[in-house]
Image (tube, rainbow, N blue to C red):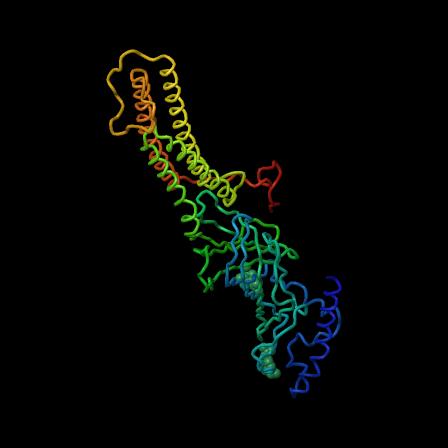
Length: 412
Ligand SMILES: *[C@@H]1O[C@H](CO)[C@@H](O)[C@H](O)[C@H]1NC(C)=O
Ligand SMILES: *[C@@H]1O[C@H](CO)[C@@H](O)[C@H](O)[C@H]1NC(C)=O
């Protein structure tokens, strides 16, 4: 890097050296007055001077920043990252670069990177930053207004709101710091423009904001992007199968308790759901706090299916035991057959009516009650989750640095 910088400086100085004869060749008569003061620099100290930040008395130099957000792509909620393409237009006033416009009639001059002071920007949340032009050129007008364009592609870390996944909406912040200057020397005035034209994305940028965080030691500006997940895929792929399984399980409760298919049906459903559940939990993001509501929802669904399968197995087991006991101690007279005539039952042994009748009627009554309670519980859980979805908000735990007794950022 040092080598590259040196090379850059060298090239810049070389260019300074070569500019003078070039401009002279263009035929300006009074070069000593006409040239931009920039080209007067003959001692290395003066060259160094233009690379220092312009002074503005005791007030900080104001640098106007326009952030054009041209694309947001590859939002990865499982890795907490977001990739974006930005164009920054920085402009400020450096009177040392001004020249007499009536003598040197050029509207603009282009100066190479490294030959004048430019704010060096560091992006705090970035995993990587790709500055598309390694040596961008600055444009200067006769009054000394400098304009510099920087295009970058970056992948940044973002604190996604997980509770409402897959309908989440999160604020992702990009903090730009000029680490080589202090807040006394430099102040940013940021603005942001939404230039996103491609909209075929799961995540849509709903809002853009900029702010200058107060009381920073280092000049800083922040761009906040409000991202909203509009993916229908997750809803179709997650909610619909879950609801369908729950409904199928409820319908399984309508099968008669004596039917052996009922146990097989419920166990198959439970197995299928277990497979679905394990792949689903992998697909959902998770964190130390504010996990997606869907995780709880699907776990409650799993519990409901489990309870209903257990109930079927238990009652079927009790019923079979009743049959066995009735077989081993046959009762004398068959009393009133209280089994539901609509469901004759597949059991071929209809033998001892008395005991079997009371057992099966007891089991059926219990099954019926359970079915009603189960349906009520299911409907209730749906409403509870719908309410939570609508109104619940989750406040994340503070970041580890903020939670520490002397943590957080240094303040002025
Ligand atoms: C210098 O500071 C003053 C007061 O903050 C401001 O109005 C002016 O625009 C600044 N000049 C430059 C060149 O930044
Ligand atoms: C610019 O140059 C012209 C011609 O030499 C001179 O008359 C004028 O005063 C100069 N203007 C400034 C602002 O120095």
